[in-house]
Image 1 (tube, rainbow, N blue to C red):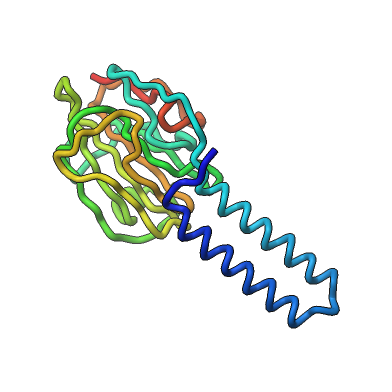
Image 2 (cartoon, rainbow, N blue to C red):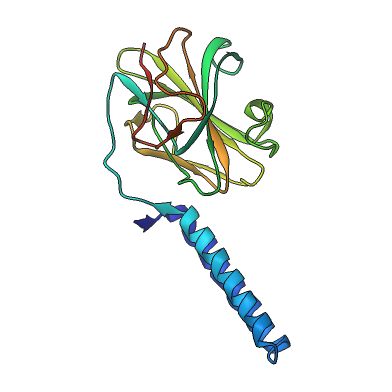
Length: 219
């Protein structure tokens, strides 16, 4: 397992914070060994939490041009018909994946093709399970058109803890299924939108793996 490049600065700042805090505790409470060890344990736990958040585990990816592969680790929290008002402007089948702080937060292309649309939206930081987060939170919208002409829209959505969405996408890019297209820090959600009638291959509450789990068949 390696550490994702998006974590280098955060990890360095965390180490600096821990060093300063522990130095202050040693100076202020040098004669209270129990208190000092409590702080040592707590700051070590903080370091481990931040480190695991940015982990980049090695995986054998599942590429299948006839399927949409999960763009993220997490749990399926929404499978429903809804109005998609930004790009398609019609009714679509939405599948949402909630990424908790303990999940790997790398985002991967769910399909191969050409990026036909991309837009970043600044916004709020409502809890990721709030229905309004899809339209009011900080987010990005990406549409990839596959080789057979099927457009697949997916959306990175910041959560209550997330304060930065990272993307490596621009229009006319060539997208390769399972390759990284972005990262969301500290809790978030990814939505996918399919044509009505698409065969979904996951269930509500199911845990999925980015780059591995098949979400739906391509129409």
